[in-house]
Length: 468
Image (tube, rainbow, N blue to C red):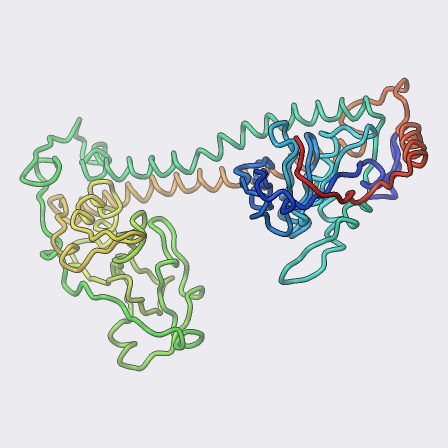
């Protein structure tokens, strides 16, 4: 970060040069006083705001709750600094306590609080302090590492102009990020609407040349086209359902790939090369091996994931399957993917889970629940394959859009960092030759500190409660 040519009026300094001391207290000396305590968990490293600090009595204060913070202080976690648990203290937390695992950077008159915040949020600063990180299991830096890290200081009026420009530009990217963050929910709703339409007969209207399908209830759970029929799953299954294989943890590590519930979601799955491996007997391998077109249904899980299913393809083979799912095989004239798409649809999920057993944190379905699920069937295999093709096409387009949105979301983070890098090179706003150079301001502050006998780093220790 140092060594580059600085714009006119700028000065290279350290964080310690531009911060003021803070007070440290022992809250247990005021056992009945109430304190607001900001620990590392209270800092949201996505929004970089303080959220849900703890309210504690002095007698219950943890040993690390010692540092008194003030409005505009910058809190910088020295534990795993690459996570950027960084936040500025707002007015309503003035006088709160924070942890000794958080460096308190109190801006002096040499630096704009917002300029300092943007500086320490930059990737360059994170990399700089990261060089001092010690420990692999509990990686951390010291306060002195933060204080000795460099900062390039423009004149104070230019700092304010830089902050104004940064915040105007990042506000745009923040709005774009918020819009992109809402897309996963919208994408999921669109997938569900595609599947719902498919099993009302709407998705293939153009294929059959119908203006609109004529729907009829036909004693089923919802209306279907008049030439479709309802059929229980038991009439479609040729093998199973069969619950998967339970093995103790000691059997895991090497051997044969095993499909686990975290290897697939409704619209994505791993290949068998990424499955965990287990030691199997020849009999276990024979009884639980998967083949192409097997339908696998999750039978025990959190309620939100219960019933998720997958059709086995070549990428998943060879493999066996775990006990928290069941495997079944359907008739040759029924495409397994048609059944899977129905079970993923809103109508299908309601039918499949209608008799689920609910516990506190998980739910389950059994083989009977699966076999009694009613499936809406078109007249012939060709129509089922057409529906599968239409769903495949729609979901492929949705997935391409999701990938593009993810890439755009990642680029926004890069864009924000590019804005900061440009700002700290003096390329974001023009310099004003009438601004007082940063060197003059720094010298004045150093002289004032020397006259007062105040050190630029570390907190003063004291006793008593934190005052607001």
